[in-house]
Image (cartoon, rainbow, N blue to C red; front, side, top):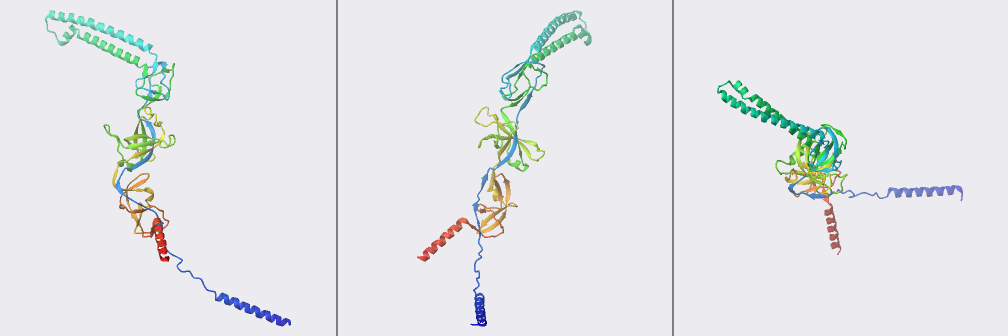
Length: 402
């Protein structure tokens, strides 16, 4: 076979193969999508709400301060000759317990001198009283009326008054000397916890010196800062035995989990805190050092603590987790499978709950799930409802196949 015939046959085969391939591509069926997109309701979780009376709590922070404190100072000068064992930093002393003894020798001598002066003045008064009797009898013998001024001179009334004045001054000097002698013994003014001591035996002290710092151990105050809007929900102690709102005081850094001290709202300080402009309230904590009950944790001066205050009861409100209150004071409600956005009136909010007075009805289903797309009337579905629907579908299919 010649080369021309071979070339012609190859060309014919190539043309026929290309035609067949083109025919296959042109006649290939086209795939179409039908029913691939189906709108589904958003899956959510809901919670029911109830209307009732609730007692909210206010969580705030504050610092511990003594309710009573004193800088111990002497009222006389002298040398400290004895320091009693209880007068040490960290110690506890009872009211009237002697802490320091200043050398009393000079004051004992002064008292003896003042008593001697008093005895001398009393003696002069007795002598003058005798002279008064003599003058009275002499005036009666004269039997003559005199002017009042002359009569007083004759009866020695100016001399009597002068002697009485000296007696009164001498008695006052004795009392002052007795007081100074008593003041050489420095005593605790109340049941106290000693924070500092600045003297020792042999120290020379003068009136007004700082001998130490004492704080009363029966009560401490916690100064707590709260928003002004929350004040109307707080109760403070009044005259008598009425206690204010109950307060739970916690020091999470120093105390164990679950440990706290119980106090009561005492007074509202009539000035705002300078920087935060918050209101300041005093919380009274009895037996702060756990002196009477050592199973309780002890408070420390200047400690930073957390206070949980029980506010007044709020009646006829719905209590809802604050996480379920959305932006702009709204709440998402599922109603007949649709999303409803409700504006609510929040009467009060604490750290955990919002207390709603209106805008939300009892037994309504509040949406707990955070949704990416929010629109009024959007379709919603519950996870439990999906499972129930799937179960019903499986049951129906099983019955059909029987």
